[in-house]
Image 1 (tube, rainbow, N blue to C red):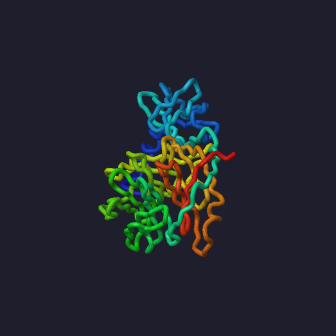
Image 2 (image 1 turned 120 degrees about the vertical axis):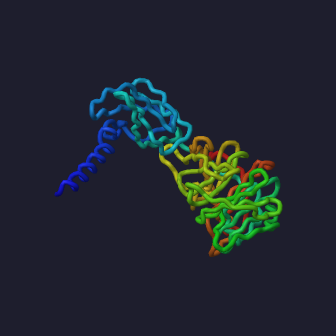
Image 3 (image 1 turned 90 degrees about the vertical axis):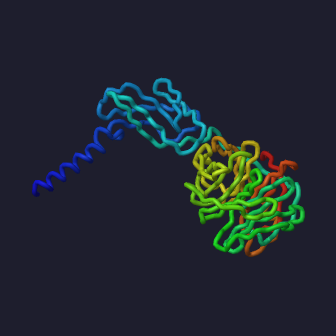
Length: 345
């Protein structure tokens, strides 16, 4: 090896030693826990392995930028949003500070309550509609349908099933969830990374928007200020309706796992009601924390619709504030059901 090659190799070695040596927090410290799944607000015993016997000045622990309460070696998992989290140890030693991460799961503190339903009324529904989203504005039902070449957004007289107005999507788009916020009607598409905004009166398309970190469009709802968007993962994203950019997310979580099946969404009084993908059930999700507080079993509804070769799964949920009832249907169902949700006896 000539001197030039030796010099180059030495520099490379020094570079990697500088990047991965004493300055690498993982080589200095490690967070030690008894497990990696905990209920929210649980006391958690924690210790910090000091691999190089550094003179530590202080240690503090954080999740989502919030310092966790600690007494001695016990943390309290006081977090606002549940799910997969990075527990960060901020370690001060010998005149410098490093951050040491460890992935954990913060779960709901209790199991979901199981609910059932009672049917208030049955109404006709377009059997050709591959229902993806439902939304009430006063007494008018808005509906989004899917499938390429058959996707649309429409106004419906829910009592008769009559389609009052309809705007078709181009054949390249697969329509998904909808939500009406202010004077705009928002619609997602599935895998095109694009959503549309309509005038809810004329049903004229006004503009479009693109997705950010959430690559797919599934369900959509709003709390009067913020839009919530599911994307087929454990995350429900919060969107700024002015810019349509993602400003955060919650994760759907039970007391035993992080769950990833939220589909069509509806927001009611601080809770997100979400169809469970491919199941005859619906989750009731705390919109602040992501905790799945309830599960509604809609078993039996599909048995009440006309059987045919295209008949598909339950999908579509809308809340009627005036009637204080939910409306649910399915893909290619010929009935729309008005129901009340009640605890299972």
